Image (cartoon, rainbow, N blue to C red; front, side, top):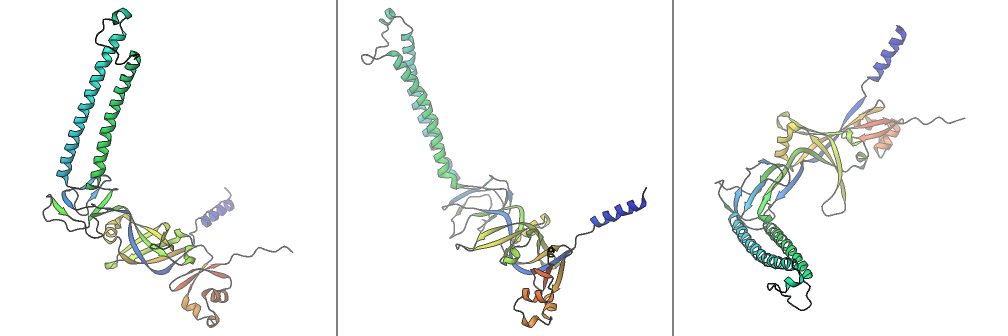
Amino acid sequence: MNVRRYSRAILVGFLLLQPVYAEVVTLGKYPARILPEQEGILTFNASGLVSDLLLPENGRAEKGQVVAVMDKEKTEEEREDMELQLARERLNKRDEMRKLEAQRSKLNFYLSLNERERVYAKDYTPSQEGEVPEDTLRDIEERVVLLRRELKTLERRRRAEFEKKHENLTLRMPFTGRLQYNFVLPKETGKPFEYTPGMGQNFATVCDDSAFYIAIEISDATLGMLEPSAFSTSIKLPEGRQLRGTYSHRRVEQIGGSRSDKLIYFFKMSEQDYDTAYSMRGSNTEAVLQFTAAGDNVERVSKEELLAHPSAGDCESWEDLVSRAYPDYVILVVAERELLLRKKDPLPATKS
């Protein structure tokens, strides 16, 4: 075996496996919020007697599961009345169909006779001169089909109207997650209780706990131009604990009702911290934002060191000072206490 070739292969492999140089810079502390994957509200539009409260506080349920029912007994009474009315309509329609079917039987019998026999068929006499029995039979058959369709349509519409009228009396989970009631629960569980919606108060809030995020608004345009996946964040908790988040996605949101936009970065948290995140969701907190710059042409310089440069007094910006102190570098990130510089790309050689 060629030892020199083997040694060269080992050297190439070693170079390829060298770790990528990276600098982690703390950009500073930013206002942040902990948000779930999504949130929804459940509410009754009017006061009434809540007869069923089927989930406990902070209970977890699947999408479509019933949470609470208002005025259940009254609703059942109205349902019984609707079914009675539908039963009467069915009887009336069936009576009409039976009469038509009796006429159809007589007509079919009449049409099965020859001309001489029809003279003696007293049960059928045309209602008006010139009436054609075949046309009358066709009309009867169409009328029977129409009555059957009318009955189906009537039942479907009555039930749809009933469900629409009472849909706000049954609250269901809009998606799978945890539920939190926005009022004080009665002491005696399992018994009906009066509920009156407060001003701006919903019955319950549903939290999709399949994921939680640390959300930070990035207002610095320079940061918005950097690679988003290089950001990470953390929130300090008591007893030395931390909630950490890795970049997931970002989106533009409007500020209130104005046309101004803000860029929100979402950092997904570890599943082991979901219980803590659930207890903190929506609350305002403070997060440390960090940026990781990879590459061997990155230089890390403290602001204090730069301000000690002889040219500092003549400069009006960090860019101006860096151009004098580090002419071969440009600013990549301006952090809380330091700057991350990137070496300029070499100029292409000019042809003589």
